[in-house]
Image (tube, rainbow, N blue to C red):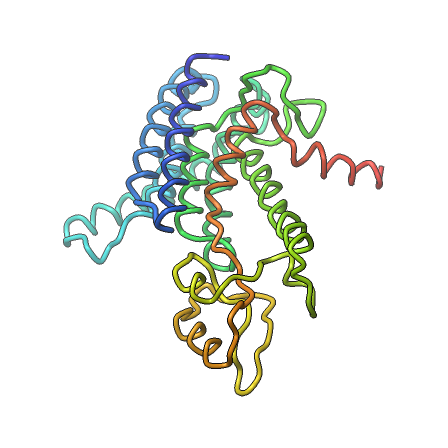
Length: 307
C-alpha cells in the first residue's frame, strides 16, 4: 500500500469520525468538515493526475476542473455573495460546462485501459456526485450532510486500495470504482438496521398489528421521546391513532407528541433519526480491509442465478 493511500485513508477516517460524532450528538455537521476534506482530497488528486496526464491529454484537467466545480457547488450560497463574487462563481460554472463538453468530445475510449483503468475512476467521481444531487432532491432518505460526505469521499479516495492486498471485488478484474464500493457497502450496513430493530422488538415483546413497524422503530416512553432524536410513527388523526409507514422528515414532532399525549398514548412507536454518516464511516473502514462486500454477497449470487 502506497504512502499516499495511507494518507488518503487517514484524511477520510478523521473526516468521517468527526462527522459521525457531530451528527450523533447534534444531528448537524458543519460544512467545513466536508470542505476541508474535499480540498485535501482535491490536492492529492491533482498531485496524482499530474504524474499521469501526459498519457491521456489536456482533457483530463478539463474533467478535473468540472469535477471540483460540481463538488463546491453544493456549498456555495449565491445569496450571501456580493456582485463580483457571483460573477466569478457564474464564470466558473460556465467554464466547468465548457470543460465537460470538451472532455466528452476529446477523450479517446482506447485510453481507458491505461494506468489500470484510472480514467474510469476519474470519470466515476462526477457521476457519483450527480447521483448524490439527484438522490438529495428526489429521495426521501438522505440529508445534505450525507450527500456532501459521499462527494468528499469520492475526492479523497478515488482509486482502489486495500490494507490486506486481498480485498473482494465484484468481478475477476478490478471491480467497481472505489467510491461506489464504499457507498454500496454503506447501504448494506444500513440495511442491517431494520433486522436489528426487528430482533430487538421480538425480544422485548413489542409485537402488535400491523407488525411492519418492528423493522423501522420501537416503543419509547413519550416523555423520553420528546427529548430524543426520534420521529413518531404513530399519529393522531381525528379520534384515531394510526401507524404510518413513512415518516416525513419535516414533520412537526412537538405537535404530534402533544396530540398523542392528549389521546392517552404513553409509549408510542417511534423511529430513530439514524445518522447515515455512521454506517458510511464504518463502510469506509470496512472497505479498506475487506473490499466490495456488497457486490460479493449480493450482486454475484444474483448474477449466478441468471447466468
